[in-house]
Length: 432
Image (tube, rainbow, N blue to C red; front, side, top):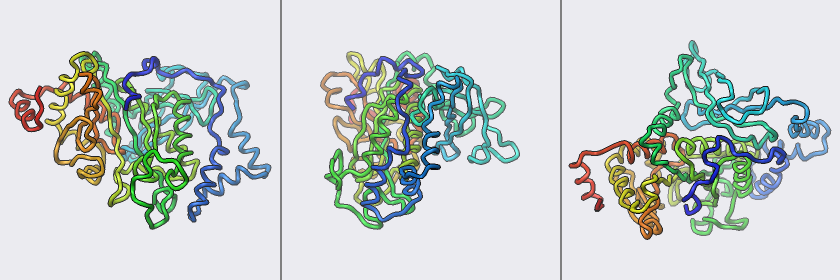
């Protein structure tokens, strides 16, 4: 994660300024995705008709497309705000739209809103109102213009955070003066798998069958090695347009699996940016007629799982003598291994087996340049005596608010007893 060692100059801005006249993502952009997919697969889906219909000469369809791409900026000051929140499963994203009277630059300018929590598994039917609090805004790459995406968290009408609102506690941790003074940076590597619709089998794989073994697919190029590149590239550009601090992307070890990296993000922004990036990816795969999976082990057997490796550093780790601070952080992480594992995603036991570049879920380990450890330290960090660590345990379906806040809490706020610290240091062969 060399590209996330220093944050952009704009990390403090609530919303990245960029041109409002860039073209939003439209249905025409998906013809190449669908054409390639149809050549490889015999699977039929409604998405095929949808995209091809929009490419036809049918007057009604063409007029609809013109309306979808219509720029209303010259005719009204009003904008569309897409309010986004996390649903009842803790991993699903929901959204709905509302009209705002004029463009805004900060989430504090937006009104609160509400939704039916009984329809998302977040409230009982007899008291179903859940309140949305706007927290972060991004430019909308689908509608373009001054339209925005709004990341929200969720509360009862009395102002109490509901159980699935993990952002609230994370914000409290990151606002703690001791944490804030350490300016925690996060670089998050989000892996995901693209699946064929209806059959839930990886994109590019023969239905019910398997491709050749892993090896040629990681960062590979070519029709038999790369499946879904258009989706990855479209998502990359959508994130840049939106103002998400995306730092890179690549094809992964298992065919049909991809990764994008977000960071460095400071504090709560890590969670905000990952959730918005996930929302964009859901929308893009929706348009492409492809299923997005964040399952940490989508295919059993000799295939890599999907993780969400989290690179982390504090101000003290980045300064001279920082390697000793990193080792102290690793010691703390070893003592709270079970707490972290329980918060690092559902189904992670199927991924953390000690194989396929993972450590065993039951045993904490660390090492330099070792991708089979719980915590990896880079060669450059060891050589320079300062830098960052990589927590390789989080699953692809982890909640970034939970993971980033827990890392800060364990390494900055939590202090073990001297006896526990000494025993742990001996156990993991760590001199502090």
